Length: 117
Image 1: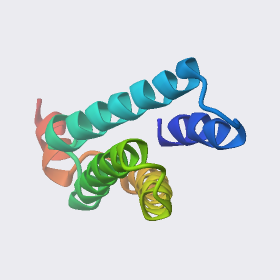
Image 2: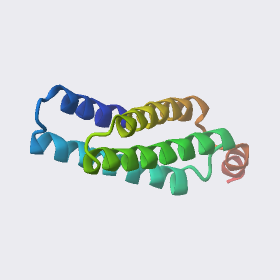
Image 3: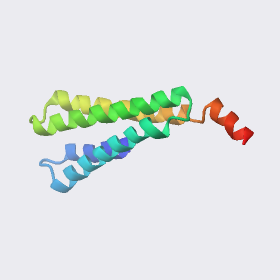
Image 4: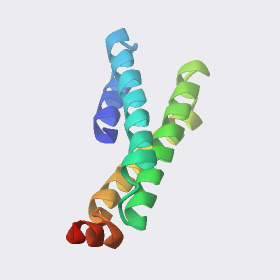
């Protein structure tokens, strides 16, 4: 989701004036990314290893801060600082997502409980 949202955001940068459909798509994808990352970090990651949970939380925090920076960029007149913050948090979210894939897997407690059942 971070990559897709970033790709649509990058297409906004190429436009001389923002098309409403592209801007709405970017905002919609950003909100979906925040929702999914929040759900992942709050609910889905519970039975997983601590490194996977930490990666999920980092992705959720990154998505939230990227959305805040995007709102600041939109409402405060295309601030360069907001743009760099939005891009930085998007990159951090992509890295956190890759770490989640690398560190993912159920915890030993969950594996032990499943093997008993």
